[in-house]
Image (tube, rainbow, N blue to C red):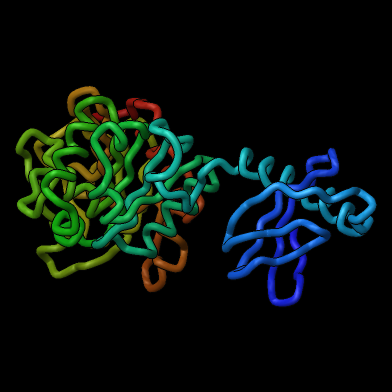
Length: 313
């Protein structure tokens, strides 16, 4: 706790034996207090302070302060590093199993949409931007179980990262990190000329055919093996011909959702946005509710996280 003496702020922690560890802030000269001297700027010294010299209100504040600290640490233990914790802090084995990329090129709205799905499924996660990811080693990246790269601009995503970083991510997946790519994250997972990850052994992905007809976004019916057809939000998304097991198909039969392995890593790619919030649907007609699509988004995340194979063709 602290109190002000003149123009100086003094911090002290009682030890219960009549002693206190005292620290003065903004003290440039000797400051006398109760016969003891606090000497230099920011210097911690031991001084004698008898209990009788300490006012009862200060003792009460100390107790309250310690109670608040105890509550704060308990809350941290409950929340873990969900949402906004930096992956650079802490030990080499992160608490959160999921690393969500929110760097250059990603859509901030899609990052928020993915976070909403993670939160509704009570999944702990950390976020990482481009500069932070560029600083992370392969072993540090591999400390997570799942990397999610959301929608946005796959050209800018790739170009915001160093070639060493994409090599580290690729090696991490090869050595057991799982990967979920959504729209731009799906393009980025392929053999993109814009510093892509090439988790596909050379396969490069193109846009779903609606793009060639001048359509930029639409409600698209995605058929799944052994499951009902769902209308999902699509916007400039890829199709995945040539790689993986096909989980979902576009109306023209090309792959919309695929899964497969790269080394020891499990990879799930989707060209549509099941996580899309309801306000993205304005001006379009969907036969499927947003809540049903969101449930499917949770299924994709859980499958990628837990290496679970979905029904496929």
